[in-house]
Amino acid sequence: MPSRERRTFPLVPRRRRTGLPFGDLPGRRRGHGSEVISHRPYEPGDAVSAIDWSATARLSAVTGADAFVIRQKAADEAPRVVLVADRRPAMNLYPSTLPWFSKRQALTEAMLSIVTSAEAARADVAALEFAGDEAWWLPPGRRERGWQVAERDRSAPFEAPEDTLAQAFEFLGRRRANLPAGSFVFVLSDFLVAPSTETWLDALGHGWDVVPVILQDPLWERSFPAVAGVTVPVVDPRDHSTALVRLRRRQAMRLRDDNEQRYAELIDLLTSLGLEPVTITSSDSADVDNAFAAWAEERRRLQWAR
Figure 1 (spheres, rainbow, N blue to C red):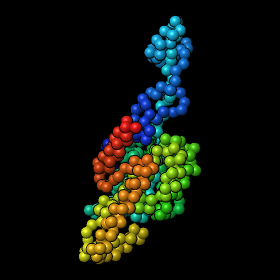
Figure 2 (figure 1 turned 180 degrees about the horizontal axis):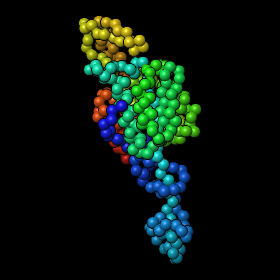
Figure 3 (figure 1 turned 135 degrees about the vertical axis):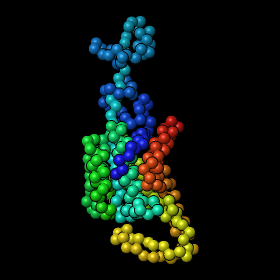
Figure 4 (figure 1 turned 90 degrees about the horizontal axis):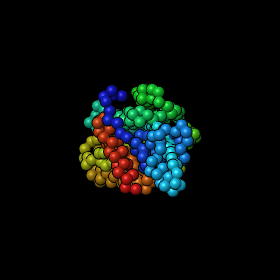
């Protein structure tokens, strides 16, 4: 992965948590944090800085005696971040040497952006992908996670099965003890083979903050160019064999309409489930970072609008 300094983005949860900085999540246990969850009477040894002077004044006025009140806060805990990488053969298109959108390079840049931002938020990072029917699972942790994800990305084959995303959600569902509610699950794929609605609902039922990261070529996959009468080389991603194809005008228009409809239906489905996808159409690292930053800013705006 490139070594240039990345622009990080805040891990903004879907639901706004009052009083918390972006990047930290409140725990259920009491402790040092920023979100007030209750009050109690002052006890000897309590820090003076924990006294709620407004509540103290109100209670003292009611009781007619000095009655100090202490704020109790939820302990701030770092979020947990999971990367699910789709490594179907089709995700290996196109080589970065060609002038088209390189999904492989965009996948690399997106993972680096997420890991860098997770590390900045002091988050535990996990990663999951498949090669054939074998799962590669990096359990949640903080030490050397960026290096481990990068090393895996350099050597990982693009041999995942077509239903790799469905298998990934099933795999994570069996590890719910390691993935508490509120865990971010970034799913990186072109979603040309998308999970079923039931699979999405099951994942959301676990309380995870699922974030689809859509990696699609804006010209050849979200639409289709007017190449009628032009001989176009078509590559089979499974064995990289190439065939020359000449399309009629009607065929090219049908492919365009089908691709645009498929993308619109994907966005409609994700929106109906309350998911806010990150759409990436460039493999340039700055463009990828900006896409995640825009996603975080939009989430922040939606939080305040709710």
